[in-house]
Length: 475
Image 1 (cartoon, rainbow, N blue to C red):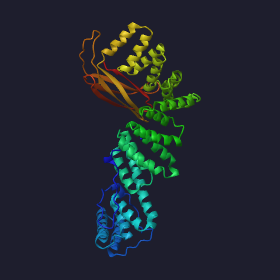
Image 2 (image 1 turned 90 degrees about the horizontal axis):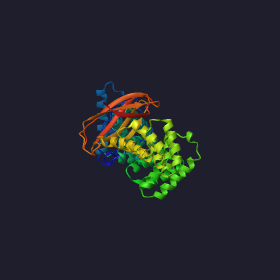
Image 3 (image 1 turned 45 degrees about the vertical axis):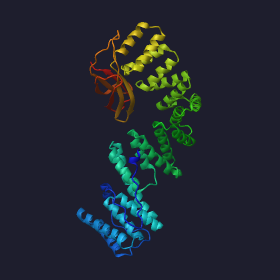
Image 4 (image 1 turned 90 degrees about the vertical axis):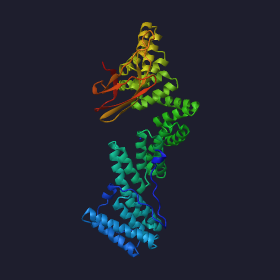
């Protein structure tokens, strides 16, 4: 699913004085102005020879045979209209501003187009329908082009088009929401929050935009939560849940923000209410994300059998879900079910053999069953590790998956406590389907790390139906 320096450019409203400067030129906007010249569909008149010459040159630009002819006609049109406004007392002539905006569209200048249309409409409000059509049509064209770039991952190009679109038209939330998503996906939560706020303010004014309103509110709350602005997140989520009271994701974020804001009683009450509701629900009817939310809520409420049921179902659906396995293993640790703890921590280690937490969970289960020899073997595995791997994100799409994390340096020792020399180590990462079939394999070499130093891991696996991963040290 925004920093202040990246906030949308604010187009100047042209006053009855000097013209605002020209904006940047957008070739796509210029190229989209096809068709024949049409006069204004509202009662404005030239009443000035320079304005008339400007309109005549604009008409020629539409009919130009070559790009050079078109550019020359547009230059002539703009010069005449600007001269009329600045030198011939036509600053209150709506036709001068309206046709200056039309010239700006053909030149691909969204800032000057916005300025001219703004002044023309202020002078002759009945031009609003005609002007809005120009604004909204070009907004839609630029927005759709931006979305195509966004889908291809070309976010700089997408943002440039979204910004120009938002200069021309500001009465719908979609462009702002898409800008918020771009920034959110690049971990620029402050910028994302700015644009989700704008989208929410617009959508709240129109009852036909309730879905857009809801999406913007939830995304804004998530951004506040990521920034540790939990009081702000709570305020937005309370509004959102008044609109969509049954949204599990929102309630989960709200519970987390309650807890982070020091409102543990509110968090406990909300989580208990969620568990009570879900206990009456057929868990098989929930999707995997909701199952995980049920499990987390039950675990936090210390209702471990219900957490076990939810996490076990999630593991059954996807045996390669690291989060589901990890949560289930921790649930068995809380329940002191050491046999199951050993079983599921071992499954975790099959996926991620160099993870400290998984090794410690295995050792806890072995110790609970008094398997001291096994405890020693597990402890030895832990102390000799040169680094631990912490996977922080796993995102899938139709044809690929991205695994992100860090290798974090340790101080490896032998069984006698003597420091061990280390060397770079290559990890082989396999991307898997639900049946465990390897769909793609990538490698990453982790250098020698000092204790606490991090080496980033980001690997992309290609293939349809990727649902999980595992890694091993290359021998």
